[in-house]
Image (cartoon, rainbow, N blue to C red; front, side, top):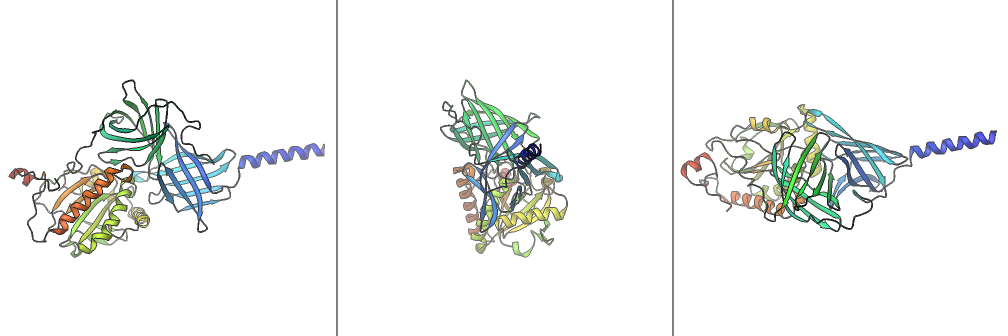
Length: 433
């Protein structure tokens, strides 16, 4: 009898240990979030660098480094850089299980179930399909929200056997690095980079078009359709927002992350070329632009370029907003101005700048010449995931800055394209064309 009791006790202990799971070890994991549309997979690598734990979020060719990580024993915790989102998990019998908390406007928190399995490298399908439709190339896309609002887009995909990578470009920015697979005529794509959680499922139709759904986080779902079009393009990003009256002077005063008031009328901006950016630390495309602007500022500041990012954050509380902005500054080693301008709402941003016809996207970038006139307004930002589009955008920004810096401070500038004064004079000249 005692032997039987000892045997039963040992079995119970082994079962408890199995349920608890093994200590978390460095390595490659297949991670997944659970959205209303199903499982959103992404790659996760846990590692140690210089004796400290780090993590990498993997989507196609992108690897997002996460330095704020702890994994000790059976617990995992990470804070996603400059987004304020956080992920926690414990090892169990079937791998890691936990949750992702994503912070939204007003401090609302979306709690998304998370799990991960060590040593598993597949994305959607463990066994690849060998008979798949080909979706590589460029597509003209229409997204339709639940309220019926339609948004145009351009899809660009690369396919190698069953594996698919690419992105969607929209008038407000791109969907960044997407990765997934074809299984027969079904397309599956996903991305989690710390800032957004995107899942796509679509099917190739008999006429060759695509039709499917797009989930963003827990509450957003859109239908989308796409047709092949090698010439598909978005509308001119410099035409979305215009100056209502080019005789008005743009002006603002906001506090930086340290609480110091900074005004566009301050001496350090006089006679300078100034880039004014409507942005937010929560916005992945703003992260892409911040990386680029940091390089630009270091290259052109000596010639008279200043950059001011007006940050519209999820928090109305100044201290929380300033903390989020400080995290962004640290991530990209930003040395240009970042000012706390308001909450993350496009209508709120537009109301603070009645000189503009509206703010339609974060980021939106204004190019102001040495005389204080806004000469170009660029809506959205095409990041590195868009390939040649990103390269052309960089060239456009650099070309515009070079031209503005080359102008003498007292010179009469050309008329602003599409401004009231230029329309009145019948001069619709675009100086970039």
